Image 1 (cartoon, helix red, strand yellow):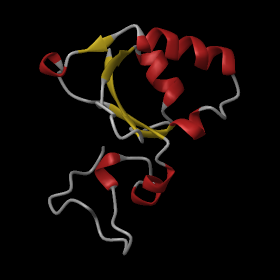
Image 2: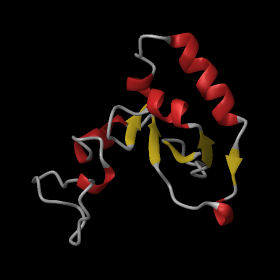
Image 3: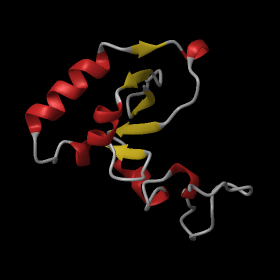
Length: 109
């Protein structure tokens, strides 16, 4: 299972984490990425598979104290964050000037 953190634009967002199967994860995230935006996911070709994946995902919350890594992040209502994640890879997040957000950036292999 892979853990996905949900970050919502709501002021009371609690950044929950859910367990996804490999198949569900691959449906929600483009190849070799770990950042997704809900508005882009909803444009996928198979809405029935997407609905089924989210139904299953929501049924598998993971307590943060039990999390063994976060494998992906989905942003809801935060399209302004896209500018920081042009490659949809957390490790390659950038500032508006194009410099990397992390000084000791780890490359994704």
